[in-house]
Image 1 (cartoon, rainbow, N blue to C red):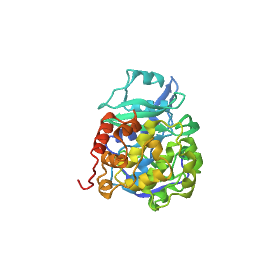
Image 2 (spheres, rainbow, N blue to C red):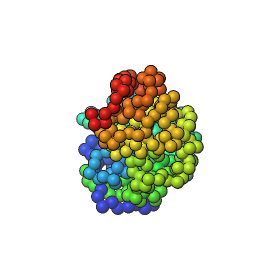
Image 3 (cartoon, rainbow, N blue to C red):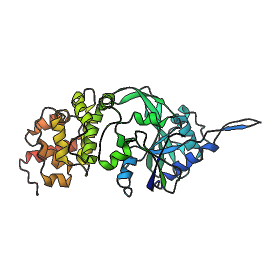
Image 4 (spheres, rainbow, N blue to C red):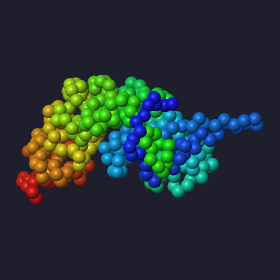
Length: 358
C-alpha cells in the first residue's frame, strides 16, 4: 500500500480523452514480461499512476473546469515508464531517448501518433520526467522522488517508492495531493493527502508551505514569488501565513535566480484572471521584490479597477511604468522581455495619457 489512508471524494476525477491511454497503459503494466526463458517468465510488478499537484488542487476548487496541464506521478522509474508506454504502443520521439532508457527499437507499433520522450533531467543529467504525447497533448509523468541538495531549483534527485517523501519536497500543502488513477474512463475518487493539511487548506483558503517556509524557500528562491501568487489566488485571508510572511524577506534578494524565471513567475500572477493585480503588485512592493522584476525604474502600484478587471497585461504594465522615460523602461526590461512587448509598453507610456475607461 503506497499511502496509509485516503479521502473518498464525493465527485471523482474523470481523465480527459487523451489521458485515458496512459492510465490504461499503467493498469496493464503488471503483464509486461521482463525476462523469458524455457521455464518461466518474470513480469513487471504493477505500477501505480496518480494525478498530482496543481491539477488536483484545481479539480477540488472547480471539478467542472478543465486544467491547462495535467501532471502525473508514479512509483515506476523512468526506464519503467518508458517501457510501460512502449508496451502500450507509444513510440519514442527520439531514438536516442529509447537507447538511453534501454527500450527496444523497431518493435513498438505507434497507435494514433502516441509518442514519448525524456522531458526532465536533474542537475546531473539523470532523467526523472517522461513526456507522453496523445493527440498532440503532452502529459508529464514523474517518478516519485526526494530531492538532494537544491540550488536555485536545480538538484540531483533520488527516486523513492514512498509518495510521502515525494510530498515532503513540494512547496505548498495545496500542491501536495494525489488522486489515484485506476479508471481510464470513469470517476477516480481516492484522494491522498500526505501532509494531512492540503485538503483542508484548499477549502479554508489557507496557503502555507509543506513544513517550514524557510527551508522550502531556501531550496528554491522562486518559491517566494509562487507563495505570493498562490496567496493572492487562493488565500481567503488578507494576511499571509505568518511563517511565510516572516521568511520571505530572508530570500527576497532572489540572488542567483535567472531573470527569465523571475519574469515568467511575475507574469503568471499578473495574467491570472483570479488574481487582483493591485493586491499582487502591492505585496511585491511591500517585500521589496518590484526592484528585482523591474530593476532601476519607478513602479506605480495604484492600478485602477478598470485595468484590473480587463486583465490586460501590457496596459497594466504600462500603467505601472508610466513615470519613467521610455529609454529607461527599455533598459529595465532588458533582453528577457520580448521585443514586441517592450515596444508596445514603451509606445503606451510615450502617449503620456492614460484613460482607464478607454
